[in-house]
Amino acid sequence: MSSPAGVLFDVDGTLIDSTYLHAVTWWEGFRAGGYDVPVAQIHRAVGMGSDRLLDHLLGTERDRSRDDLIRAVHGERYAPYLTRLRPLPGAADLMRTCHERGQKVALASSATPEELSAMRRALDVDDATDVATSSGDAERSKPEPDIIQAALDKLGLSVGQAVYVGDSIWDVAACAKLGLPCVALTCGGTSRAELAGAGAVAVYEDPADLLAHLDESPLTTA
Image 1 (tube, rainbow, N blue to C red):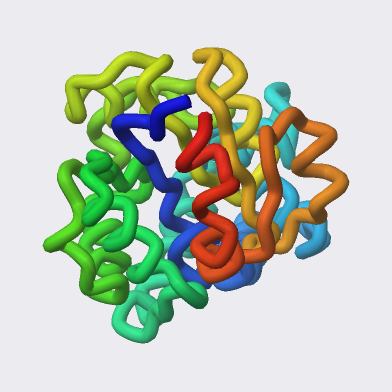
Image 2: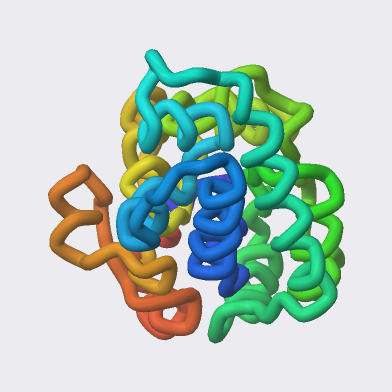
């Protein structure tokens, strides 16, 4: 079988080591809003958009008057990390290898434009990035598939021509709604069993592990 024409990458937790930074800074946001939410629960929700994350952790019947404060404190506490973000092992090499093989490469992120710019600087691989999305490219966040569809549209590809690489069960769920294969990485802190159980077509440790097994992975034989 031929290789997929396009590879879409989630960025937070997949290419950039940021999942636990988000978990801790969301914890501080919740504390500022008067909520005591365990960090482990927050970590499991990272990967959702902020609207979905708050609904998931606090419930839909909550007093929403403190939502803006929670988001603002999270953003304020996360901001100092933007200049210190680090790529996960093999992230840039994996993207470049896909690009050199003739595949179109997308950063399918729902991060804010500011956060996406910081992650792109940390990756330093714009030469191998064909398109990128941010929060303004979709109305609904993961586990809805809107941002993934936006990335496909920007690449000019159909679902059957691409594969997605993510790190959370929310990535897997979003891909399932489109029928797009999702390769999952455990470097965001979610276990192999959980990712496979959610429907990931293959699971690897991190981008370097996926790169080391690229020829037998769904990125080559989807």
